Amino acid sequence: MALSEALAQLNYPCNYPFKFFCRPAPETIIAIRDTIARSAPDWDPEELVQRPSRTGRFVALTATIQARDAAQIETIYLQLAAVDGILMSI
Image (cartoon, rainbow, N blue to C red; front, side, top):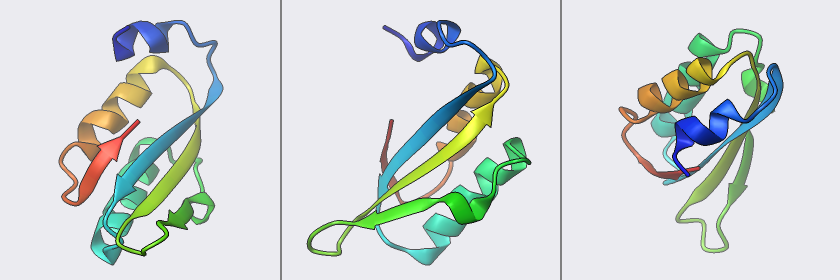
């Protein structure tokens, strides 16, 4: 199932978790926080959950926003695609 099809099935507004796997570079984490905050102004960047990998080489991040519609989620994913250092997002 494509992302747009999955997003169309959600009941908005709803909590939507963005999950990332990246290197623990401060500039990457700041870029993720700033990007999400621009498109979801009611999201508190302090709520970004960080979990380091066992070796510390990577970090898993979760940012849960109150999504108003599918377009908002797709926009955030498109903007995050330009952030250097993100290895994977789900």
